[in-house]
Picture 1 (cartoon, rainbow, N blue to C red):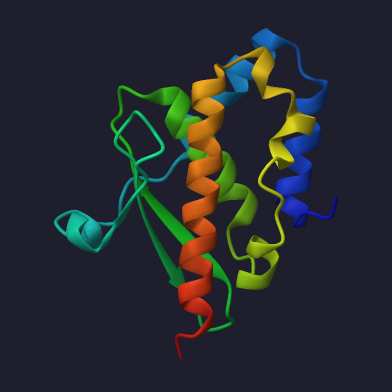
Picture 2 (cartoon, rainbow, N blue to C red):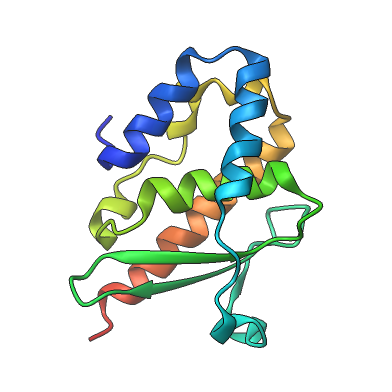
Length: 144
């Protein structure tokens, strides 16, 4: 499986970690999730909801001048696990080209052995976030 380099590094870090370390790493990633930019604070209407998550998750994708994508997430602070999962994707795919994002397998996380630390329900939400990131990538491929 070929993943963008940053995402592959994250997968490898989680793959060797114990259950307790995985939980700690998720919390660290949650803390690294940047706050929603000021210009998006009152613009939830333009953000895409991720209904696969039980926690309210909204995302917004933008393309930079070089064609790389950047994702912004709005997730309640009382949901650190969900924030951590979103941060894994945000960090691992930040700056990736749409084609690279589309090539990420939906089950890439299996090598991370996340099921040792979180529920399958959370993993389904994680897959849902990736699916919505891919949908955004498809839309942005055609944007000038």
